[in-house]
Image (cartoon, rainbow over all chains, first blue to last red; front, side, top):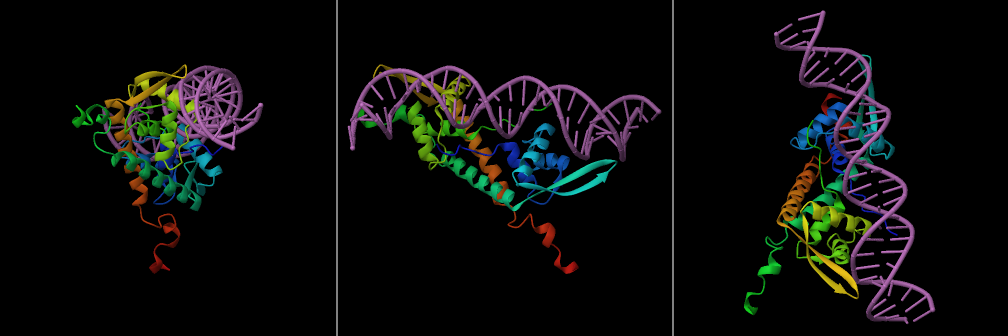
Length: 120
Length: 120
DNA sequence: GACAATGTATCGTCGATCTACATATCGTTC
DNA sequence: GAACGATATGTAGATCGACGATACATTGTC
C-alpha cells in the first residue's frame, strides 16, 4: 500500500558516519565507529563487511582504493553523494524523533492518575 | 565478547512514544504513531501486536484496561516507568547520534579532493 | 449491497545484525 | 623463538524485529 518505515539501523548509520571525514578501510571503520559513538557501537566484522557490500550496491559508499599490504588487499571505502545525503536525512529523522520525546511534558504518564484535582 | 548495539527500532520507538500522553488501545496506537511522525510511521498490525507482546514481556508497557466493545475485547496499554526510561534513553541516543552528523563540517567528503590549494 | 473505517490477531517471509569461525601479518614481551 | 594482542579481511549459520498477507467482526456511510 505504502512504503515501509525503512529506517536505517544503528550499525549502518555509524558505518556511514565513520566515513564523514574521509575514506577508510574496513578495520579502521570499526575503530572509528567505536570512537565517535563513545564506545557504544562496536561493529562485528560480519556486520561491517556485509554492510559495505550492501551499501556499495545501494550506491551509498564506493571503493576508492585497493592497496596491497603484506600480501593482502586493503580496500578503502568513501561516501558517495547519495550516501552523504542518506546519512544527513537519517540524522534529521532521528533528531525529529528524539525531539518528540525530549520536548514532551515531564510527567505525562502519571497525568491520568493525578489530573483534575478540582473534581475531587 | 561485548554487548551488541541493541538500538531500538523505529516502529518500537513510536509504539512507546505514542503512549507518552497516556494509555491507548492497539488501533489507536497505530493512528497516534502516524500522527506524531507526520505520516512517516505506519505500523502494520503484525508489527504492532507482536511489539506489544514483546514490550509487555520486557516490562516496558503494561495492560491497563480490558473493556468489551461489540463482543470484542479492547485492550489498552500504558507505559511503565521502565518503558518511559527506555524511551527517554533512546531519544537521547538518537539526538547524540544525529548531532555527530548535523554538526559535522559541511563539505567533509570532498575535502580529500579539494584541500590544500596552496600546494598546487 | 458495497465499501471504508474501526479493531484484534496470526502466519510466513525477509533482511540486518550477531555469534562464531577461519586465516594471516606485524610488533612486542618473555 | 614462542606466545600474544592488535591489525586486517572474510564467510556461515542463527536470531529477531518488521513486514505483507490474511482472517474475521462490527459500525457507519453511500
